[in-house]
Amino acid sequence: MNPERSERIEIPVLPLRDVVVYPHMVIPLFVGREKSIRCLEAAMDHDKKIMLVAQKEASTDEPGVNESFHRRDRGLYIADAEAA
Image (cartoon, rainbow, N blue to C red; front, side):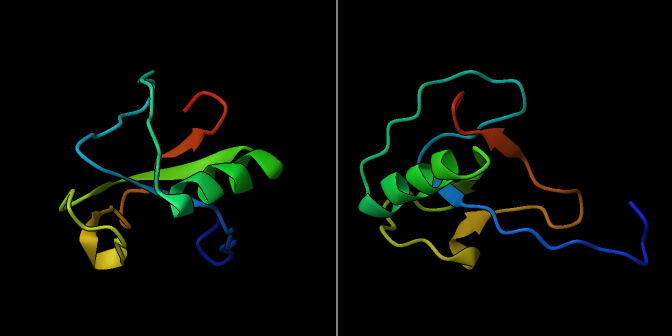
């Protein structure tokens, strides 16, 4: 990527409780929160990409940026929502 030109994309973010997903893993994801369901629906309606992040505390119902693990310096793991 050219450091002088950065593109900004919008992508749905799905916080996961009690699970960490690594690239090339295939596991079932059980979602029940309304926001999580809408997140998956948004991904399926567009380019079928979704960012998966692990929550720090599984008991948090509305996790924000500070309540999830993420790596801004190394890129983000973006999954195919059909496979996720």
